[in-house]
Length: 170
Image (cartoon, rainbow, N blue to C red; front, side, top):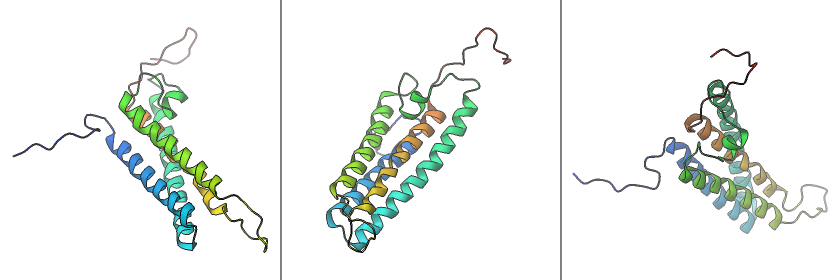
């Protein structure tokens, strides 16, 4: 029996979240590039569908991560920057690199494709030429939501500090 070679995600807790982030980010980047490049009916529709789908998943992940973080915050000391931007010691370096890289790629691609087709008034008063590409700016909610979900579920946060006069019981 031969051993399968390791991957860059071996040994990472919650690697399914990281893989999903990478996969959806890649899908969005290809989708947005195609929509901006060809800008025909099918390309625009699929661009909107992918963007709104990623946004919906991002909202769900954000709320799930937030709920998980609230539960953990009773016993663990955590900050918003550690949760959503994966800053500080609780998150391993390779997780920070991949997941924040996805967030940067989502933000960069969404802004670039929204800018690439300038908004121009249409003669019939309908939608402007590049308005469908603006849906892409919703996609970074996916990156923030998945970052929060990963950190809340797998981050190695320290114990909550008790301050004098704190009425919580340990």
